[in-house]
Image 1 (tube, rainbow, N blue to C red):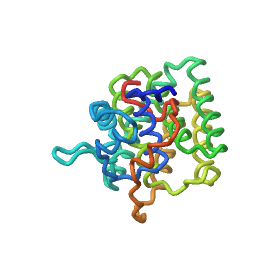
Image 2: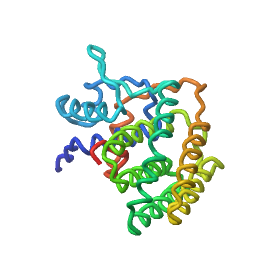
Image 3: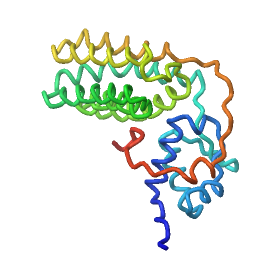
Length: 245
């Protein structure tokens, strides 16, 4: 009988990100290295680089002498993230309109279509990632490297904030549909090369996202890491917009 394949660090990373975004590992959960190593069938030395990578993307918090926990953004931090996004994304979308090609605009349309498909399928993790991709492509094609780098970090943080505090967990909720409709309205303004309208719609969209956050929530049960990761299949699909994208 052949030995089971040993998971790579990237496969462990994908599994952990997927589980955090699916909210099966709620914010504040302690990530014990020994327990994770046993669950994934690897040594602790294979777990540590994964935790560092997650910490660099602000998905996990590493504290000296206390180890790793799933990041738990505060209400203040969540509001600051959206405040900064409202400051920089109008500039990014204006730069995008000035420089984007037809192919760049087609990518935005594809992001919206894939996000709608994910929501219909009930895959909120993928839907949130694709929503982030929409904004990240605007930043990339805007060719504003400084603001683009800032936004990549903010989008990663926003994904965790939305999965932690957003009320519309059902894929067909009114709020979910509105998110795609807002992207479509923004895309219409971009196609018309109407920078003034696009910047206005971007600010409204981000304000609407923030308004859907609910910060008063019941404490979640702490899951057992071994039972959570010990028997699940490996998913290799990109689960989170990374900082080096």
